[in-house]
Length: 286
Image 1 (cartoon, rainbow, N blue to C red):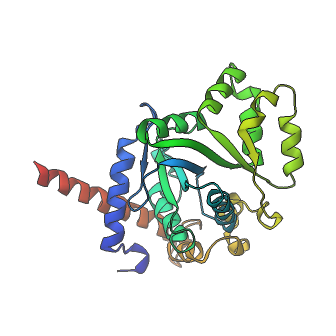
Image 2: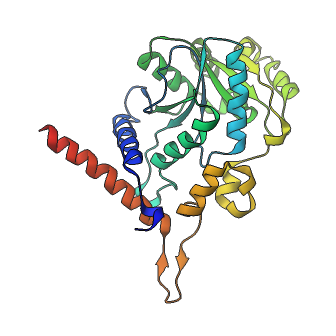
Image 3: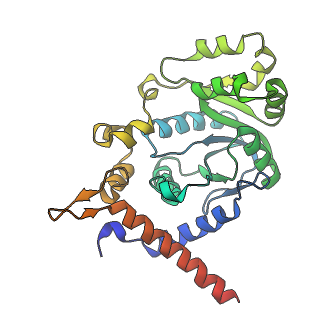
């Protein structure tokens, strides 16, 4: 069997557990969260860096390491990357599968940030994720969301709300924000945003987090669209994954005109094996 279609028993065991968690995360239900197998249980104070990590970049890792420095200075505090479960249109499945993105991020984090965990949410808004943490992990005392400057601009943008101040009051009652520079926008731009009259009442819940200019322009979208030009922006585990699976590459065409979609075949095989194992387990429990 080709290597790109092979999944080790250990990998399948992990993915089976994660899929079972994802199956319980109904986007239409009340906010809920899980930690992936092997992640520490959230307690005390936590930092959450939510994203699609499609794919994980060296900027993601650098920002998480910067947050780790903040956490070490504010013990006890624990660090998590997080995914939001999406209802995906089966006619246009995002690549790679959420299952594989979770596994890939775990493989990237393990040697670099071994004490960091991964959270799974059924809802995407920060206030909903804060509610999910409060409900699912009552031992958590304080929540800090880690983000780039572009995200905090969105949070304060009134176009996203019917009643902006009420929504922000609800959010900041439950969580605080750690904001890193993004692109050319840094600490001064954040101060300017917080000093706007309509934002001053919330300024105490937002802190600037230093971040090297080296990483500020790196974007996962560049890698998805032009992967060959941005391989230096991803960890070696991601480069290997991209090379072996062709998850971000178009299908190949053989000399006889047959189209070969390597990642499409891999995704179908993975979903079949994971769900087959779940079906066998359910059958055994009857």
